[in-house]
Image (cartoon, rainbow, N blue to C red; front, side, top):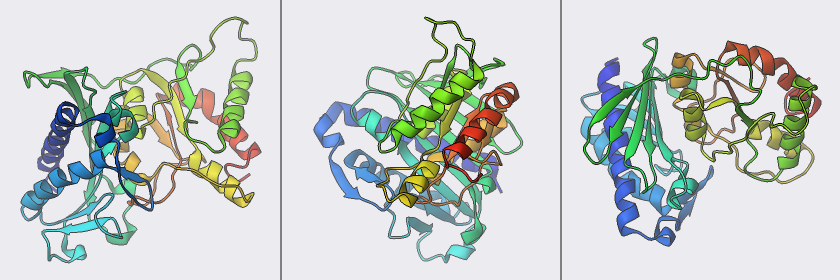
Length: 338
């Protein structure tokens, strides 16, 4: 597996997407960027999402043969959300499976509110049994708003640590940057949250978070901020905030929440999917502790549709502080099995 050649290629693809989004700010209105192109089985595809397909597919077609064949896993490819390249190759013959979310955080970037992220993970092609744990190369590229000329690229090759550089999009100069998650031993006084940005069921997640705080810090002084919340509506954005030391803990528990709501006969909402988490290797390689909702190793099928929960702790000390209380609360509120 030519890991570094694949990494360089995915970083370049992310840059192409970044430059396309910048161009869209110049020539498209908010209404044009936010127009709904189609509704898929896993999410709404906006026009800004559809436009980048015209970038990524030709780039992959150009490289696919030299890489030994690629199975692309991404929204909108066909009814299976998969595309085998070069065209005509049989899926089992391909060397790689590459899972992409070309714009993670579409809703934020199309309104020019907050950075989105290009996310990619590459794994040996192990067919239908492939999971996110098979990913050996991961890349995330920041897609900044029109007010910023700086874009971060983070990448990891399994066993080789996590890396980061900032690109000045005006001069194309690169500046090495550290990947340094928070070294704090506590979430007290820091940014830490359970994601609750989409209804329904936000009241349940809010109650879990409230009880978590009360249990961890029963003697916190009145009139003081115990924790700060930052509801970044992007899985890539949430991971980025952990990686660069801004946030100390984040949990996306919507999949478990919606299992409970469905069992109660209630309507469900939009959950996180595996392609949203395809850059998780960067977190693991940086020392961030990423688990599933039950506390075990994080994993999911390598697809675009399976609902998935994930929890990230910036370091082992924060995991030791938060995890036991959190898991008890998830059992109490029936988001995981007792």
